[in-house]
Image (spheres, rainbow, N blue to C red):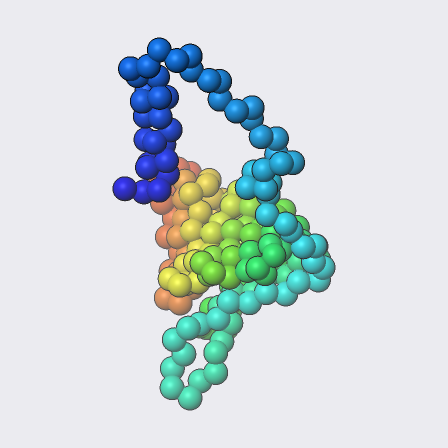
Length: 194
């Protein structure tokens, strides 16, 4: 049984057991502890940081090949937790590196970079651009273990000849695949782009 389930069950049973079979008056519970007195209720300390440049790398390079970055984020301002493995970023600019050397550039209002889980969340007016495409969305999560980007937010995709709106998307830069799900609206221009 998970720890929280055990604690919850214990808390629910305690008042029932303490009041059964006794003529003694029940005592009132102790007064609530304020946040200042309870360190567990306080948020973990954060350390301010400036001019951060953080990387994630390919964990399985081929023989005789150095580790290549798969994801990079740069932010002028942010905070990190005491352990130095979770970073909260202001106006991050990121790059997803592809195998064909075509970088995917991302901008957002805020972001979180988690070294332990090897994930990054970019949030708020996210744009993703390359030499061939432009996407707009509210948020995107990069998972470095699977080397995929995913968004369950509304997506606007455009290129020289195509404009589409979709409910979600998955990006797989290693294979060069972008999957748009539930496309609701689209315009495809036939012929040469203007």
